[in-house]
Image (cartoon, rainbow, N blue to C red; front, side, top):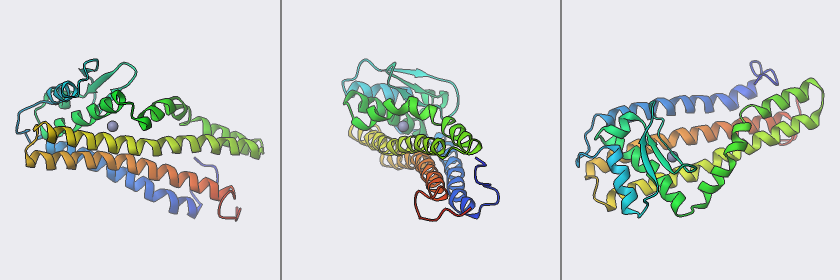
Amino acid sequence: MPLFGMFIDPLYMIMLIPGLLLAGWASLKVKSTFAKYSRVPSSRGLSGAETARRILRHNGIFDVHVEETRGMLSDHYDPRSKVVRLSPDVYRQPSVAAMAVAAHEVGHAIQHAKGYAPLALRSAAVPLAQLGSYAPWIIMIGGFLLHMLELVYVGVALFTVTVVFQLITLPVEFNASSRAKDQLAQMGLVSRADASGVSSVLSAAAMTYVAAAVSAVLTLLYYLIRLGLIGGNRDE
Ligand SMILES: [Zn+2]
């Protein structure tokens, strides 16, 4: 957002370019890793859908459905309707990548069933975070145009909420992946080679969340420094 002349502000460049580069790299990495392990057949010949259903049953979860959804890497668990939605590649293919993603999404369903607190916190914060993608910027720009510093602070406070949301996402995602790996190993659904492929796919996916969080924290720090709220100098 062009609030402080971001194109000529070296601090903006120094603080935000690394986050953007990291996010870009993580996004390429997750796509290439997923593509690589999509071509590696799972040793048990299980598709993502079968993997998901077996893990759910094994955990005594019978009220969560597994459905196919459109798009690539659009896989998610919807806690409101209790549905694990898997993209066509994951749903149908008997690949190591499909197993990894399916087991991860079921990891969220297990979190939900067990009342894992960070997931509940994240679900509760979703509406705020959605509001947070535009509202903070509009309020901040409004504050600058109207010369109302209080309004700028409100914008920063709202943006802080979205950053906190990104940070809550991290333990939720790491925990879902570690549950996925445990379940696959415990149930004997993966060979040793499968398990290492599963780890690669899940680590690559985790990096995208880390990159988003790093980027968000750096953006927040930038505005706090430029507003003189931290660091002590309010240079223009
Ligand atoms: Zn996840």
